[in-house]
Image 1 (cartoon, rainbow, N blue to C red):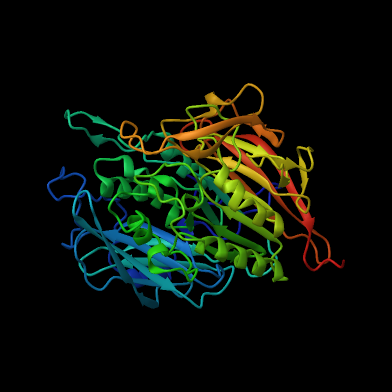
Image 2 (cartoon, rainbow, N blue to C red):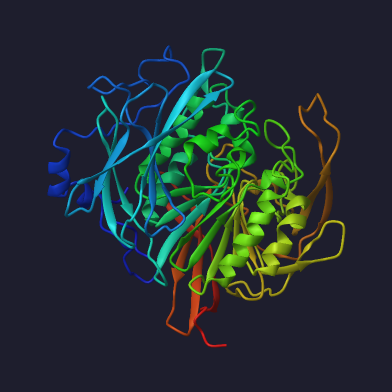
Length: 532
């Protein structure tokens, strides 16, 4: 993994300085004094697990584990630093400052807890909220609690206003680690694979400002030990997530039986995403933040999707609260003269050209979200759920059929006028052992999930009902590569002119984050300050 950021297209360096320079600055080293613990430690649901996983620090307390970042609503001035333990700790805090000033400021962390219903183990997640930060600026920090060695990371705040930056996106990752199975052997019980580790390394090579995770993070709801699975996911990704925010959307595999009234208690404890004003029951399941001229909106599609894909069926759980919030959020973004782009991150998808055993597109999303995306001219939607990559043409409106087929408005492949329609991307090749690129229809067709039947005890869920239709909206499908992610380079353009986002999908092509470019296109539109 390179110390310095990967170059943007055209050779311009990514903003920020290398992590090595940040972490070896004399002011930072002097502020820490004692050595910094750099080794990762996995947390299990029980202390009787193999000793080589549970690694208390040399000072006697449980270690800082799963260190990761999240942006606040204004990504230029607010960042949350988070980590977790299963042991009680005292005085969780974050020391931080600029590379020149060192770790001169300290913020106390608040602790959220949840008790895993399967193991009856309580997890404590610490969140330190850093506010009043300077936009477009590098910071260093150390997360610590009494009895633990500090764990270091770096932060790059987002720019305010129209400045260039890069972000990345993928979904459906799982973990690269093996678990002890009931027969005494080792294997995976959460459809994990080594590719999930390669994805993390590849993201770091891109050096994005932030990464969007399009749901189905670690598949803990499939695993015997849910806490260990979450811990394995964080320890794989802290190699990146302690240096740049990984901003999530909750997927159906974040729904865990017994963990909270609607099953998202673990997800809601681990992540302190921007407050959307929702009820405590739905806290963190939808939110937004602004980076530069881009408004990012994260949704939870289990609320509107028909598919029964979690540990239990929660369709309609918000009673319309999420949809009302989304309409208001989109309207506010379109009124904001500093916001040029609206990007939606969610899990289940309105488009898919994969045949069974893949999931298909969901009519519930088409009915509930697409009219709002059209009304407020959402520019880009990134999804997961299907474990491959594909792209739609810009779409606007739907056919007046029972399946609400999206209507393509332009079929040019390389440059998209974003004012004409919304481009949907399925980016679900994050690393599971169950890719779906081999199941794409020979010609673009779409299996639309139009509803579910009565609960089937044999299946353990409500069976899906499908209709197969043509997919005139299909622009690109990657049949050849099971794993990959997309990078997006935001070019603000010049005052009164056009702005663009260059999107590139990369396939994982080898170990250590090696990638190959698979698809590239450019979204373009007038800036909001362009005279009419």
